[in-house]
Image (cartoon, rainbow, N blue to C red; front, side, top):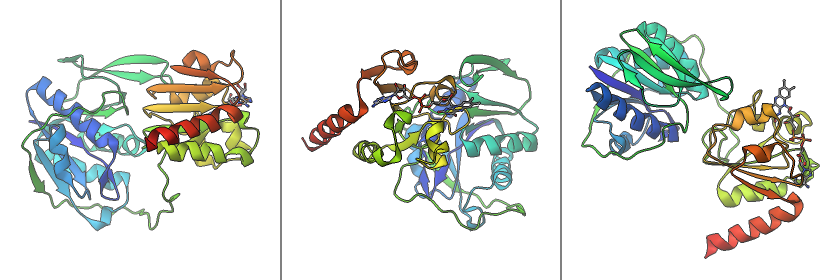
Length: 318
Ligand SMILES: Cc1cc2nc3c(=O)[nH]c(=O)nc-3n(C[C@H](O)[C@H](O)[C@H](O)COP(=O)(O)OP(=O)(O)OC[C@H]3O[C@@H](n4cnc5c(N)ncnc54)[C@H](O)[C@@H]3O)c2cc1C
């Protein structure tokens, strides 16, 4: 009997969520008195997972699954779950995770709870707390099947070091005939993606026009952040659609979210609630975003940003 976590990676490097699912899986394994096994697909330095409690790391290296394919990933994780006699399987609730987990659950005849935000409050019945209604409510769910698949919400548990002496084992998985395969991926090179970013600098219609985004990009560069925007900004073509965050855009679960010239409409907030610290810069002290903010600056972005960038640069140099 074991707890199995899928530690996701991109171009060989672990995503931040990989360390969080391992940290979480370790605690679940302690709760149910079993060991923790992590499975990786095409990751280069799998032994990094020992630091977060993975006692055994199963590595799968196969060029046929060099790019994400939900059916194929679900199939290989299922093979490892069966081999390791896993009773709990933890996957992150990223976009890819939300694709593959239901398929995996069907393959394993398991119950599946997505967007889980805490350790099981009880293991018998197995009960987990989940986010619901765009993070406006919580839902306690029991999973009655023998095998359980848990989708862990990003940033809900955190990364906790828990060094163990782990072992690596390679696994020769059977790869499904996928039918569909990505042949190439065009990425915005050199940029931190919104999904993986620790810090997101986001701007709205208050920036007046696309010609003013230079300072948003400069602030993002100083902070090593991803850039994002509100829906009207991408609708107007000021920024690419891939940057639009909110209920109808991308969800953001960064450690720091800086919102500049964004009013804080409910549809925008729905996508960024999972971010830890929210900083708002807005000229209007009545802007709804201030109610959701941890820190707020009532001020004109065109005055605040140059000073902020200058101070941050000086701070980094010192
Ligand atoms: C079904 C539906 C789905 C939607 N989904 C989304 C979504 O996913 N994401 C999303 O973002 N929106 C979404 N919207 C739109 C949403 O309701 C708001 O209209 C939108 O978020 C407002 O964008 P904004 O804050 O950039 O613009 P505005 O509402 O125009 O706000 C601009 C803000 O900038 C401030 N400002 C002005 N000048 C300055 C300055 N010089 N310095 C600093 N601050 C300044 C203003 O005080 C104001 O608060 C959706 C709407 C609907 C109906």
